[in-house]
Length: 466
Ligand SMILES: [Zn+2]
Image (tube, rainbow, N blue to C red; front, side, top):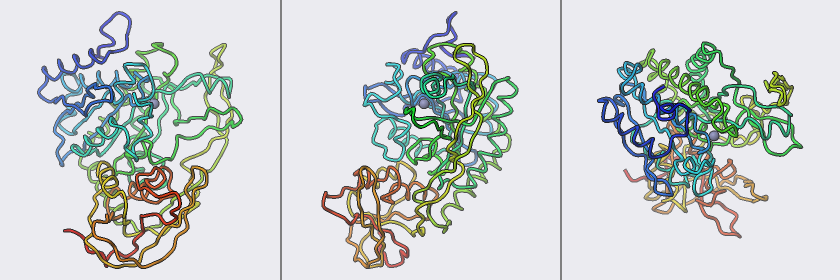
């Protein structure tokens, strides 16, 4: 692998300056690579954006992002090596068939400080619905310029900590992988994740003699001995990319808390899997594009009920841990919260769209960053469904009331008949986790009970700006 960390006898963490120099040199030597900027971090560092090949409408665009968490360096290093292989190395022929966009280090400030979180203290990976952090907003702005068909998000998982505390073992897998898991993810997009990318990833893992597992995580409390198959929150990057209409996958190698141990193995694992993703995408790019387009059209035309809240099924699994003392394999039976096995709790008819009467500018701007189209209303009278809101601790609960309203000019109408409908419902149903009412982006007074956002089941009475 050609990357800065491996140009020294012992691999070392690549500094921000070394990364920039490496990329500038690559761009200088390559015709097919364009080096740009996602934007600036909170501390003023530039976040590099690498475009490789043509990203036109006739070929799929694959986004690879890494280091949303600053203390997870292997994915970012692999992205530098991959950029080199695509720009001036043996992977360059792939660029005749696909466009590739690489953001090797989203959290440049956290990386410089070897910290998980952004300089603000926020977790970038959880901010993809609210878009409150400059780094995450800039990433989505860049995605509006070169819209992704496929997004792979590279991380590293903790080896010790909770696993030792709760199960007395170390994480045993080289790599854990998981597709988007939210009940509103298009089934057709999930099908591409399952039947195109999953086999390609598994084959690459098998060829390299690496061990893998579905991505599981566990919380910090030792009372709860369960593990969870990722999470379903719409604001998690993996889920948000899926909800905005891209095939979305998470790749995690063993890494957090072990410093530079096995760094080359970790980086090459990310590299091999990303290479497998690009090769699978380039195998039949026209078919991939057609499948993604079909999935998006199906989402825009979908009239099925919305799952607003849900619970996940549980089952026992054998988790491949390692004995912390001897290093011997220690397969451990654990209870898995299976986020592929969803049971709906609150189900609602899918509206034609939503009216937003307050915070419209902030709502429109955030939704646009997630590929959602909105319209300004000039007026009209129509039947709506209103939300009676109660707050139970941090949890928003609603009751739906039917009424007629005359819509004030300047209100926002957000139609559900679009590919990113899953983002719309997640943001605007007030009791959806991380909703804009819950987060105060659509503000409500203390004593107010009716949310200034309404469900519109039939939008024909609305007058919109053209
Ligand atoms: Zn991470």
